[in-house]
Amino acid sequence: MKKQFFSLLALGLASTAFAQSSVTVFGSIDLNVTRSKAGSNSVTGMDQGGYLLPSRIGFRGTEDLGGGLSAGFWLETAVLPDTGASQGALFGRRSTVSLASKQYGELRMGRDYTPIFWNVSHFTPFGTVGVGGSSNIIEGWPLGLGSARTQSRASNSVGYFLPRTLGGVYGQLMFAFDEDVDGAKHQGGRIGYEAGPLNIAAAYGTTPAGGSDFKTATVGGTYDFGALKAYVNYLQYKLASDKQTNVLVGAAIPFGGGTIKASIARSDRSGPGLDADDARQVAIGYVYPLSKRTTLYTAYSHITNDGNAAYVTADSSPAGVPGEKSSGFQFGINHAF
Image (cartoon, rainbow, N blue to C red; front, side, top):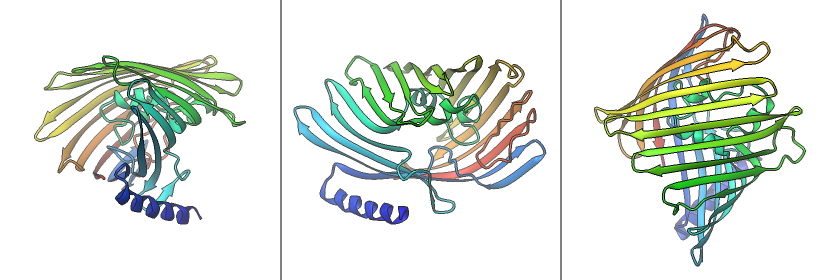
């Protein structure tokens, strides 16, 4: 039933795109071969997590209401191109409707990305996916329910975005209703400044989880020196007496028609039974565009786990082994449309 609905919707919106230039079908297909290792176990195969962008297909559109006001929608679903299957909810990546004004900003409702996610994903050279992705250790969900439900996205949300006419200042506020789902209620915000080579922002979010509040705070930034773009990101989780502090530094260097990417990340836990469970990740990769839409890439990363930490480098990796190292290598193709 889900597949039939999706097929009909795709056909309907695709035909609409010919009649209305304000409706667009877009997406990204990202496939790679990954060899990953955790402890003494290893596996080679296709990784579903992608590298540059997770594979997806979406539909978005706007309507000019006059007077600088517009209405819009965005529907986006995750796909697994190695098997042809869909992943999760039909439009689990994003499903929103919005009213936007160039002067007053944008009001957006539905399932959307949280302010925390934007701060983490923008200020890491590898983004959040692939063997070098920040999600391997610094954007994981180590402390429980709250982070798992609302770290990246929140359902039943109302959000407001500042207009991009404030001299480089940008920002976002979000509130998500729980609708009787534990760990789904969320509130957060983000404020940043972008001018020339500098982009810096901070974000904060809270989610009630199991009788306590899961709190997340992050500060990050980039600076483009021309010959090198530098990245830095600080991220902290807190749940009751447990805490995890994550720091990442990285760089993107133009080279040979492509870009060398590198990052070093560290995750430090503290709290009852957690003090020794730290981890470090080193990642390096190369991205080479064949065109504006098609890109080749490769990457390698290595994670050192301490104590009971058991982070791994890829979605397709063997299960993590507490205190054991993990490594991953991948090469693949990304095509955006």
